[in-house]
Image (cartoon, rainbow, N blue to C red; front, side, top):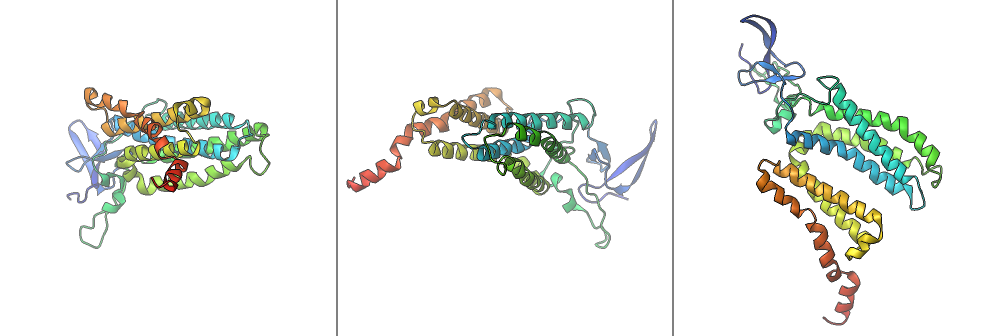
Length: 305
């Protein structure tokens, strides 16, 4: 019978020379998706640059949240924040390497994947056909293999490594915090990991197409909030503390990441000059901060200007 629906296909059961025997129309095995003729074909391609950038974005989310909550709960007097930042980076890096090693093909830092063709490839469960409007043919499978499930595997390894390493580190070096505060960054991770998991499960396809713009918008907003909260109004204010320069360069890296993700670097001669726009938001803020200082606006208003 002919295969109906976007993601139903016939699986190859036996092949001997030119003889090929296929099974009934149904769900393709994991690691395969249907071709134009509705036959299940193994995913033998390699991820494109945009796919790697998407995986990099999903890998950065827990790391950025780790750093945020470590900084939030460490306090100004604690000397343990730097060590916790390094440990979080180590956990996420090791988790990413292990995830790549256990993915197919096993044992190498390389994955084979199927190409993403459309948004519906992320939500195959919504496209199970009903040929006679009575019986539903369930063809739900990972058409974007392995971009959907590899994120869950990565989050699981991040969580396991955090529970193995971070409590011991915090207990040893977080002497500047009270007993009730030193583990709060770990407790926060126990909340945001389930949230990230649900976000990937429900909105993975939407994030795949929207993450470059999310990076640009969030990096611009957080940079403006940070510079405003730190009362940075000139280049001298940036150079006073090394931490401010680190935050600025981190945001510039995020700006560049978002620009590269949007342009995909298809035409280097046209796309590379766009990276010159990376420092523009910070420079614009520094040049216009003195004109938007609240005290100056209030004083000029009182004078009738």
